[in-house]
Image (cartoon, rainbow, N blue to C red; front, side, top):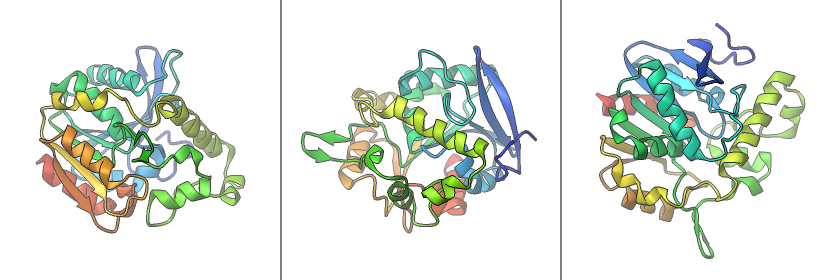
Length: 270
């Protein structure tokens, strides 16, 4: 198993995959129906506690987005729109036929972009705390600006439990170089894709009606990044989707309620 510094991903296989000349990380674990997991702003490494119970129900394919972790970044990539097409190509290469597609946070935005382009590519879609819609209107802010937060402030805002790795400078100073490099690349790639317009595609809301597969949108009841107005806007743009709210969970539902989240996804998919 080639996990390098990713010791928490010890229940599957981390390998490399070439997608039309772009070399990316791919974590695969479990058995059963295929499920494509698209990670959030924290990288695939911070979803280990969620992917492990999920892999008890599915064969989980969890790529690291181009530019994140040690995945290469194609020269002309600068929009989430690019990631949407990239993953459609990846599904062709892997012969993933209508998998369940799960996207968390930033990855939820990526999943939505994919399926507005080719709506028949998923059997089910689950979006967890998704970004992608307009985050502000004039003087009203619907989504907190994470690029203006300190590492510590962002870390405590993402979840109710222990903040993710690298949320304070003392921890950062003691990290091995390869792990620190991953965190830095994650931050840099997120800025590239989501700096402006901030965390959204202004056209996405007008395209979500193209998604026809059964869909579920999950929110953390105590998500301090996303406002009720934003959640309502997502519901209006994707009215066919079911909605579920997890109590005692923040933005990173997969960190606060990993077992419960995996169980609900399995129930919805089946």
